[in-house]
Length: 238
Image (tube, rainbow, N blue to C red):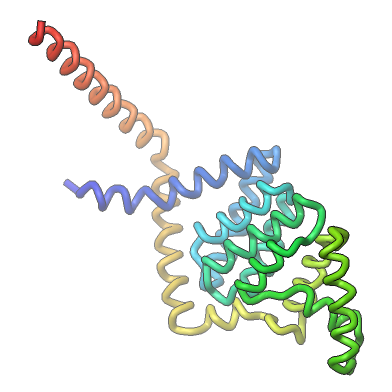
């Protein structure tokens, strides 16, 4: 018989996807939207250096803070370029972006989270506002304006979306980063492992109801045994 760890390792990918699907159904308000979102994230995970669990966590975090399904999926893919294959940074960026969206403004705390993960939207925005070929003094002037607005609590969080779009577009600092990393040895190995997990998910999904019924049966037997032990323990004491 397979060991507990073997069974757990085989079923875990499906269980994680199932949990994320349930969350997305609640946030999206539609089982069909949730199913399509998971399919999009699965495709992204297989083609990138990220695991499905990492990109699902990032997307559901942003949805938790009020982003639409489409926004969360798009931003997860774009932030994947910025995070450069680092799942921890991806989650930090998703959290900061989600919090800024929920607050309706970009604050110092969220900005610091982004900067610590390697992304400074204010720097990108200041350069864009100063215009092509602007000198450092002109860029700093725009930076001061943005920082003053942030300190006053009036910096629109959409500036993060705009900076992210610029940074990941053609010619941007993070253009195609996920694709480039996916072509490396580590990225290719990650894709193979992710494909294996998708096979596990497909097999588990086929027998999901039978597995759940079997687990419920085992739980019922275990509960009955515990109840019997407790009952007989008290009898022996009395």
